Length: 263
Image 1 (cartoon, one colour):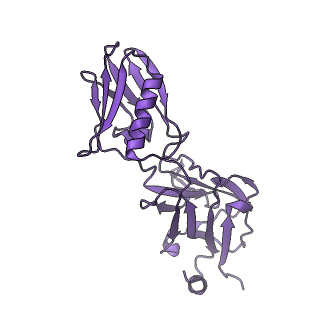
Image 2 (tube, one colour):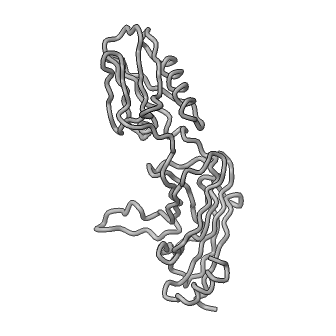
Image 3 (cartoon, helix red, strand yellow):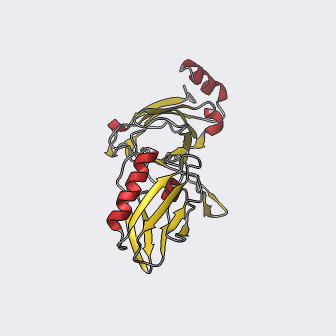
């Protein structure tokens, strides 16, 4: 009947184009539907803490600036310290040797340069890879007497939460300025899920979290990104979720549909 809510089950494997992290899919939404909400989602934690969007920083030795690139992947704290030390010594121009250590008491990193041939050294950050090493972003952090200690505790978690974004959400502006949250269908907290497991989320308040629908399309783009707006690469593992589309003033029909589906 007119006004009946519709639930759509979406699997990125059935996409028209794109990949598991950002894809396009056809959805034929009834014209009377004016709101959409995520019901539930299963996100594979197949993405890396260090990837192409978060894997570089600058080592400055005297006036020479060198981009340091870390290998993509997930790291334990000890593995990360080893990777930092390896890459600093691979890219450096100083003839000395960098050593990197992690304090078990403070969880802060100490960088040390032995037998330096330069008179000044610094680590420069312009992305949130800085927090992995316990520094602020942006920042320039100078060695003092050939030693640098991180300001903060290290944080190897890629993101506190994940955004499911889509142009299924109707665009809107505030004072003729683009609203930065306009394409966010739902925020999902990571909650310290282990690597290569799945992040499961069921929306407890689909009515409250619903967004106005973009009714002028049938081909929609969905993507996952972190809180820095970097696309999260699922490395080919597929994403599945369900959404509900409904007419907002038809509360009782929506409630029946949610109960019927145990939501």
